Image 1: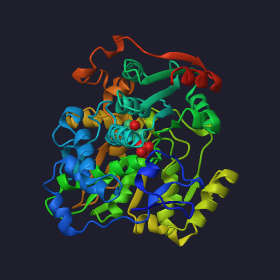
Image 2: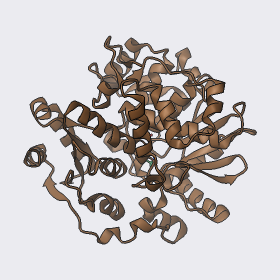
Image 3: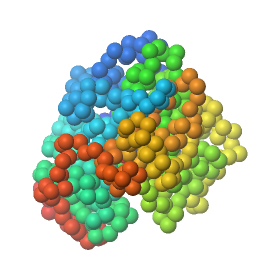
Image 4: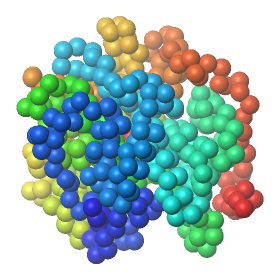
Length: 471
Ligand SMILES: *Cc1c(COP(=O)(O)O)cnc(C)c1O
């Protein structure tokens, strides 16, 4: 399998070449040259497989530069009951006939990002050892991504993590999750500023090409194709659990921010998985809902980006969206380059409403969308608790609210559970009047010793810290 850029660059690359890279040289995102089709007989054969074996089957369609035995071993090392809590790894939680949650949040940091990040940690360690190289991952987090990255990379050979976060602004639980890690290769940097300052620092350090090369700086952000392809697996696993035969269709509702998760659903559907609708749910930051309703993609400034009670969906632009637009426009790299490389930077928007391709988002690609607000979130958390005795997190609540607006008779709807409620306890207390349940392994983590360095909001200070901690 070869990979190309969404902006039409002529180069083609293999999986392990793009694994440790960010953007393509022309600023585009990498995608496979085609989506392999999974036929009926293959899907039937996959019905009996354990999650790790299913992961191997799907990943090997996209990764042909790691020997199969090694790739299978990496899948088995990653997707274990010990790490993900159940033998099914992503079990369904039925709510009512035709409506279930798919549990994706029982990994080490209690959010679905572990599903991909745990594999990425093992792939990085494998590939770096093979090359005899080291990598220093520099990131910025407001919560979920940073902790998922640290738990995936802790103790890994050849990798160090330098994670910046806004000092004092993450929830006490999220701070405890990250700062209690004592692994020598994990470094927490609490920046005296807001999340945007952290992102600016990461950009400034990455733009210093000498420093970047000298200290082998890399990232683990959501545009990484390896993260996306790992997520394709749980759409197959959800479908196979929800159906008895391949003539049945399933819809998925996906609480969305950067469009990574639902883009994996789009890839699964493009491979022939019988998905009816891909339902995209946003919170008050509705840039994607607006696009799927109107055909206008209008990114927001930081003043127009709301701080909500489903904070992992608080985005101003969706970094993976370019991948879908590339497919929507018949893989026309020149047009994507114009939209994302020229129109968007110049005017903050582009408009496909008059383009015949736009109607295909729903009619051919199955996308519909909806939006959920703080009041909806509270009502959905209360209702789910009352009727099913189940406490759901704020992002999953956004998904469930929108899922109910798009159910069709005879088609099972799976709502992806993207985090557990303990991560967002304050809103659960607001909705239910009591704290959510806390998994036993997280009891008392706020009291553990913390390993964190407070630094000023200054790229030079972060560079100095990195230099002092690399040999
Ligand atoms: C990251 C995240 C999302 C958004 O996922 P995308 O892949 O960015 O669309 C939704 N919910 C939770 C809990 C998350 O951590």
